[in-house]
Length: 250
Image: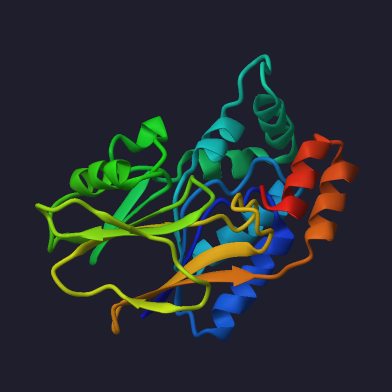
C-alpha cells in the first residue's frame, strides 16, 4: 500500500489540493494527515472540510498544536500566533471545532507510529530537529517489530533518521522524488515536512509517500499557486508576514 503522509497544512487549501493531486498521480492508496490542519493560513474551513471528506474515505487524521489552540484559543491573545488562533476559531463552525478537538494525538498500526510532534510526550509538542530527539521519539513509540517506523511533522522540514536499537541514529537529508529503501534491521523516523508552510527556503509544498510493500519512502516537493494563497491571507486581514513566508519558504 502506498500511504501519502501530509502534515502542517496550515489552512493552505491551494497547497493541500496540489499535494493530493500529486499523490494520486503517484498511486497513493491511502492518506495520513499528521496534524496542524489550521493556523497561519486563510482557508481553515475549506481545509477542515477537505480533510473530513478524506477521513470519511478512510484517511487517518491526527491533532496538531495549532488545531488544539484553534479549538480552545486563549481568552486574550498575547502573540501573533494566538491572535490567529482566535481568528481561526471564529471562522470554524462548532462542529468543525469539535472535529479538531477530538482528533487523536497518535495512531499506531501495522508497525507504524503516527504523531504530529514527538512520540515522547506528544501533548508537549516537542520538535524532532536532531538525532537525539529522534531517538527519544523512537524509544517512546515502542520497540521493533511492533513499531519500526515513526512518521511526524511539526518541524516544517524533511529529514530521515535511522539506526538499530542499540546504535546512534544517522540523519539523512532527502532529495525530492528519490525512493529510499527503509527495510532491514534498522528503525526509521521521518519528519515529512509541511504542506502549507515550508521552512527550508524552498516554497514548494512538501509531503512523503511510504510504500509498505516495497518498504520504500520518498519525500516529495510540489509546485502550487503560492501567490493565490498569499493573496488570500492578505484579503483575510491576517498578518502580512504569513503571506511573505509562503513566497520565501521560511
